[in-house]
Amino acid sequence: MPNDEKKNILVIDDDITIRKLLNHHLKKNNYTVFEADGAYPAFEQLKKENINLVLCDVTMDEMDGFTFCKKVRENENYRALPFVFVTAKTSMEDKSKALEAGGDDIITKPFDINELLLKIQALMRRAEIYKVYGTKKSLEQSFTQTTSKILLVDDDQSLAKLFEYNLKKAGFDCHTAFSAQEGLDKAKAIQPDIIISDIMMPQVDGFEFRKRLLADENLRSIPFVFLTSKNEEDDILDGYDLGIADYVLKTAGPRVVVAKVSAIIKSLGKERQKIVSELHHAADSLRVKVVPDNSPVFEGFEIEHWHVPFHGIPGGDFIDYFRMDEDNLAVVLGDVMGKKWGAWYFAFAYAGYVRSAIRVALQTTKEFSPSDILEQVNRSVYQDAKVSEVFATLSIITINKKNRTLKYTGAGDLPVIYKNSSLDTVSKIKSNGLLLGFAESGSYEDSSINLNIGDFILLVTDGIIESRNAQGEQFGANRMEEIIKNIKPDQKPLSVLKEAFNAFTEGKFEDDISLIEIKAI
Image (cartoon, rainbow, N blue to C red; front, side, top):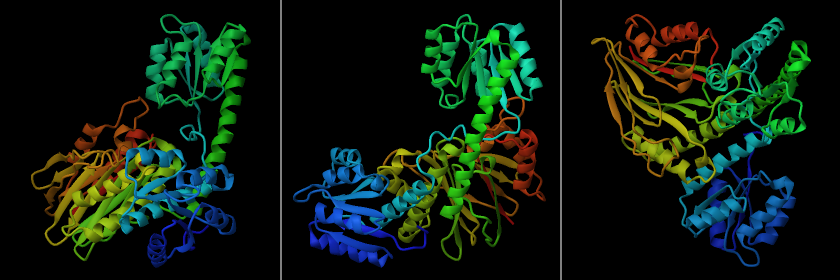
């Protein structure tokens, strides 16, 4: 359903006053409302109407809300239907029951209508995302490279060199390690596309090596092949129990190993292309952007951003700007926990959720305080049963153009880098606030900065800090600060840092790249 079409909400409550109250506010916010005074009339409404979200009371005659929700979820057509309980019950036990029954969230009576509308908007957005994309298997493997990177682990150096020669000859970028520990270290450093490992190795054998890889969330999804001289059935079964992609006998020779690896890479490539295509389709269909096309024009300041999604696919970073009034602008930078495309649909949900929450907060705040705004956003996220399962870092800066004052607060984010051009100093401004949604109160505080002409600040996500060069060396915070320190007054900070970063990484990034520059001019 296109985003601009009216959505249908089913309100189920045996209290006519509650139904009419919800009906009034929902219609006022452009929703079409259907009502039911109990579970059985509600089933009929679900059959007849195209319902996009359900608001359901818990305590009802004949069938309570939890039981009704469970029965709704039994129907495949309603598995992803957003379902919110509206109840006077407030205990954690009730919240758990709501989730166990298949509910997406719970809101307590008497409820704040703005909070309810925010939850509805967030759940509608999430449902659109899942409808287009569906629940896919791990996206951590979904990346494409022109040359596939292979890690070969074998304590027999002569044989390892022989296989390495043949794999490189076949066009693969092959790296070797001669022990499980060295293999683990190299896997972390180079993030290979596939790992081939001997079984019989001293100290740590191939099975234990595989278990250690599975214990590392950044390595567990890398396809794994056992290379061994053993041919016993039990060993092969033990290998497949550890989720290996294939099993190759050393005695088969290098050509067979190359053929096996080529087949696995080709198979993965087809799957990746399919997923990439679906991701692009999802992003286009949703017509949602997590990063605006252009930075805002704001008198007295040069505001620019640079964002590169991982291999062009929507990722976990999001950027937004809010014009609060004639003199004040809010700048938002967020990063959903999760690497590469594994975070992309959460980023969409979060971006929409955070934007809505900020708009609600801006209507109630008087001082345009980032910490006040962030506390309200955090409270909304924390109270949302499903959104609160995903954590995000978030930076909020408000800019006042009359007095050139910036106020900043952050939730688990990287420090803001501040360059005082007249003193030629670079300093970090760090927030001690908790990750967004981690606790009910994030302990956020404002930091104020007065920018003189030529001064600037930079906000970045960890994709820049953690990206590595061909030698496996991280770009790192210290390198970034050194580059910033050497920026001349007539240079554009974002352009200088972008050029240095591209040269260091040779344009090969390991995650989403996001950078925002705010300079007084």
